[in-house]
Length: 147
Image 1: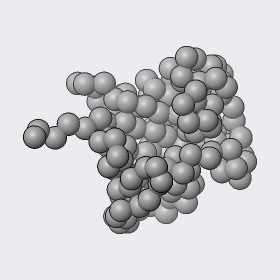
Image 2: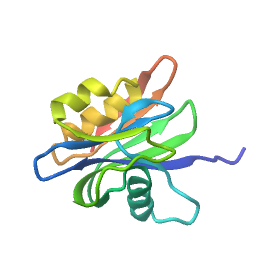
Image 3: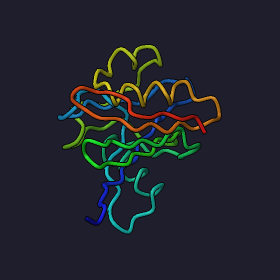
Image 4: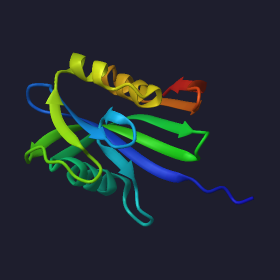
């Protein structure tokens, strides 16, 4: 069988006050912006597109914070730190609400276990990326490494 994976990316977008950008997704509730990278699309360009489409915000993508394998769904997800450049929070078909919130508040808002774990990794980023493979329903970590 030929392996087939979906590639996705997400970002912890922070403004000058260190507030974090969150979206209220119709599928998972509150989460950081990101989504599926299209075939033939550069990973960073795709992430910038997703952030803009979901939030109306343009961001500068920085450090790679994590790489994740969702073994239940065949999705490989990269997460990055990003800085706000311009724009006003705007909703879309993929975001019921968009808001800036404190780092502490965003942790309380994000309830999906896999998304919350990725958020925590980005908030705690110490210069070393993390790799984590996990299963869903229930969420359980299969392997984890700091690199």
